[in-house]
Image (cartoon, rainbow, N blue to C red; front, side, top):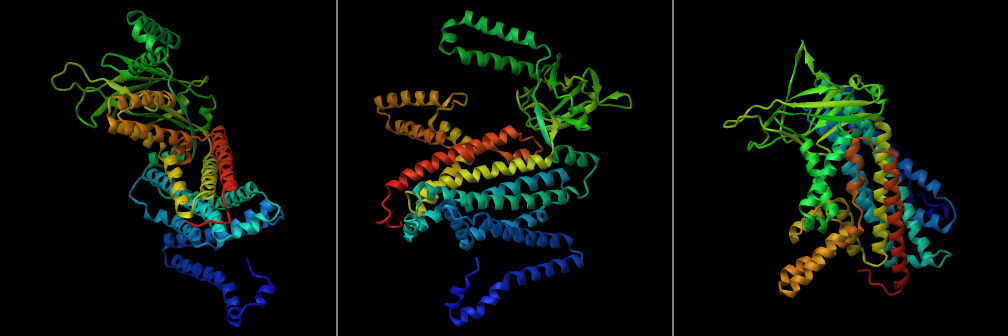
Length: 565
């Protein structure tokens, strides 16, 4: 913000002489960089020129965004004043500015490092994934450092007394800080969105490797696809067979069944579903997919995504061979010959299916016949299996890439809103270094919650992925007392730490459950309901709880005698 006239008159002559140079420094830098970009473009170096021009545009957008924030936060209310002060701190602080500059420079340069020999589909997905993930990480660091530094700086420098002597409560002070950081994140996320979107569009216009590559870009990346999972063609009969198996187990082993009836039912049903997803040598398996009737008109193709496994074969990545029928018609047929598919075992594959084969009611029946070779020493081909769930699914267009992209940015902003509240809550009680570490711990746990939960289970020897949190706590509590009774102190310590760690994990939401980056990069639909659920949890519920905790801590903190450590 430019100094007022009265403040300028109080400056020394050297500062007054330097003021005009400072005023013209940014325009001069912009003109110079634009000239360099124009020279590169004239010399035929279009890619570096576009990268430099993109950095200039993003930098100018940042300046416009900051100016817009100052205009929005020009009110006289105490909360608005605190929010405005946070924005000014961010503009004048070195660390957030350096991180933002790194982000502004990296986004236009990232397309230059892509391998031009790769398929365009892979290059585009790589750019979307790494650009959005890298921007999310850098913005998370900016948010944490700014939130912690703002409160700790006010307390250490005693500036907080100048704020709290005004008619403003401590909860209003924290809310104003949070509001200012979130509004700044809105600007930064918007800049990221513009940069990534324009970069993706530029990459998407590059020449594709072939027609299938171009179709993959248009139908698998620049889209928003919904997933359809298979149903058994004989739905009622299949459910009756599962119920009969459950009743038979209950009769054969009533004692074991009585210990965990719900678990026994789940295991039996999972076993029957797995058998249905296994294609034996002498069986043709059928899978019924129900799609919206509009799926036939929204795109020329839908995708059958599958991950086959060659059972009873010791060779890693063994080939899997099968024949395919779509609604009782052989597919594909070329020159009158029904061609078979040979795919690598244990990897995901995508098969384009013409949308025209879907019937008018939206039903698509996929039949798979085993055509595997007979291994040496065997008399029958190996079975082919698919993991129930993501191992066999149909993807169809249900929205546009632009809408999906915007919803992904909103989810990114919701995560930053939660991290801002976590940083403010930590800074309300702790000094700057410890508060930053505590906020980073929350961030790491939120990002890697699933991995950490599995690691804790493996470390303690209690790997029960299907158990609920309450069930695992009960199990570990009983095991803790048992090990203490046997004086197995080390094992008891491991069990105790696992209980504490699981308790902390239960308090932190999983960012993996609110992953908008993967959906955008792979062309999967991030629905409006999913976005609203993420915003409700990450941008409303958790900030409310964290700011309430921060307010309680700040109310009880002695702001007169602080060490600043």
